Amino acid sequence: MNKVFKVGLIGCGHIAETYFRAHQYFNNIKIIKCADINLDAAKRCAKTYNIEAVSVKEILEDKEIEIILNLTIPKAHYEIAKRSLEAGKHTYSEKPLAIDFDEGKELLELSKQKKLYIGCAPDTFLGGGIQKTKELIDSGLIGEIKLGNAIFAFPGVQSYHPNPESWFDIKGGGPVIDMGPYYFTALVNLLGPAKNVQGRSLKMFNERVIGIGPKKGNKFKVSCPTSYLATIEFENNSIIQVTLSFDVVAHQRNHIEVYGTKGSAIVPDPNMFGGSCHIFTNSNDKWDEYKTDKMNLGKINITSQSSRANESASNANYRGVGLSEMAYSIEQNLEHRCSGELSLHVLDMIVSTMKACTTSSPQEIKTTCKKPNFFSEDEVKKLLII
Image (cartoon, rainbow, N blue to C red):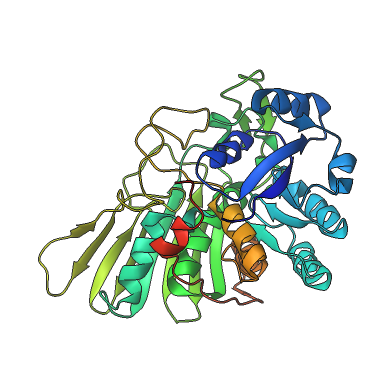
């Protein structure tokens, strides 16, 4: 029987409902209190999920809380994570770790100094889709990967988020901070760490219109680029072309494709947990489909549209597994997969990509990290409510 870690939630916004759903799947985490800079938001959250609402100061000082779940907006991640670590609590944040590289580096150093765990989303790479792809690639099925491409492109956060303004301010980072973590984390999981990046960027519209919620129809200013086209070289010498855009109405390209010396792989959506991997090899004359809907973190568990735009009927969403796996690792004194080292490297990729694209000057990636180990079905089962 795993220990159940008591979790304090800070940031009661749009994503919180997804983490509360994790209580249905994982046996070692329990959110017992919540806090928000907006006390009314905390009270609404507490009422919905039958927990206690407290102030941010109170939740950080609460000796019962062992892990802080940091679901604040990206530019607040650093402050809350730092305060959590200074309060002697393990911390797990929504992505990214921070929006400034030096601040992310400080958090990792502080966690080591305090001998505390720091974790960070995304944890989607732990799902059946990316793990099955990793298993096939690591088996040598498509040979040594030399190149590939990745794309995230849609009209923008304002279409589904009631408070999208922060994603479009000068520090918001647009699609790189919003969606880059999913794609970069998946690529590091499959290929290993990155070493340099170059690219270009653009801004298509100077203002946007909020499409949902109480501010629907309101216009707001766009201060950052909203499309980035980058070329990333990895330490294994593979080169991946990446498009991240809030400016595309629609497209028909695969999320990620990688090309090896013996074949090619189509990687499922890195923002999801399930999906099929497709493989084409020299010995085949067709694409073979490798389904994941029987895997523990690939089974369809969303049967109706939620308020989250990426949670439609007939897909898999097990967000929270990264938090659960970190809690298990704390108990067992193991390295966790959604680690501070991985998150800092991904943040380095994010910051370097934005700088390379906005200055048209190639950037070296300053950090490295271990390629995460394969997350076996036996390991997953240890975390699940049976």
